[in-house]
Length: 136
Image 1 (tube, one colour):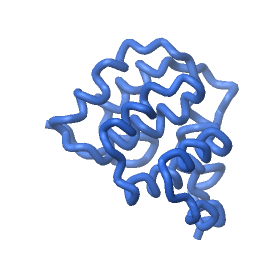
Image 2 (cartoon, one colour):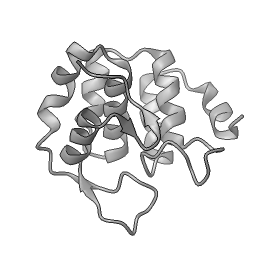
Image 3 (cartoon, one colour):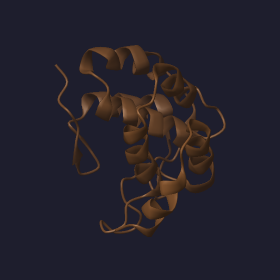
Image 4 (tube, one colour):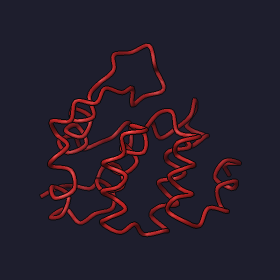
């Protein structure tokens, strides 16, 4: 198992999860280096599913302007865990978001905007090599 995942077992509040994203998430890829090591963002994302975020907490994440990775974690939570009929309610307003960030570990590649990244979450059937739930 992931040592990092075991280390975040102690997190119990929404604010602790956000603080951990600030300090540990530096990309939105599912893995860190190899497919054996889940990334910090995805470990926290998994814990957030167990925590069951409220709508207000999701919007706090999506509107966060201090870290694009907090926003990315919120968008992934919506895309992977929210009922399809509610996804547009959460992500629709972010399609034109022009915040620039590097969603991948490769910081030498071209950055994208948060809006373009969200659009890909909505139109693609896979994120990295992970199949996304089908949208009607």
